Length: 235
Image (cartoon, rainbow, N blue to C red; front, top):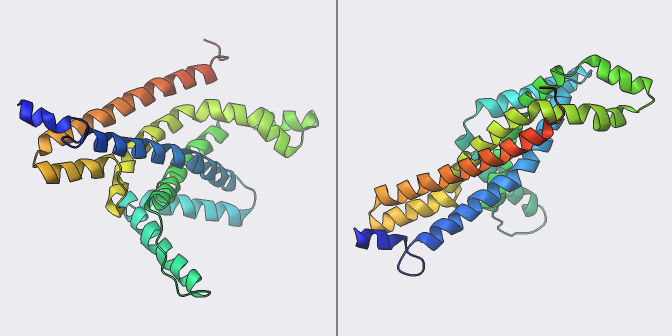
């Protein structure tokens, strides 16, 4: 029993330092993906409500593709496809081998998937804002951009915060998929520990506990943000 638990020690005799290094990469990847996915999702949602048919059609095709593809396949396409495209581009100027960074590729792939779902959350929020809000802002002399920034965006955040919070929780779990392209996040470090020690129950249980703790902390933080965003609502 104690000999088994000794595998969770810090330093050369245990694996805790490797597991927490993987957890750090997991959190960093999720935090790096979030702003990229939010911005892309908002732009795609704006495209879907655009009066230009071509832009609206392109936005709907985007969401259909990245909501329909398995996340694992999206990661492979971005990682290997991006590397081939970059290699072809570099090959026009120099005979040099390049390799795409797995962290960056994972961030882009997860960000594309996140943005596709976030765009639907934003789209529902847009539909919950009366058209009169735009008309009232225009009557006050605000430009279209100023009306969006000062009138529409605060309401958009309030209406979409719940759905975006759920997407964040999903994102923290989907970072485990990036282990397939050799990023040393939590699940990959756990798998390495299992392969070296032949103790799958121990290490996968620890990984489950770490993901659960991360989800609980995220839920508490999201609850605080949601209460603050909605503090002006009538009870």
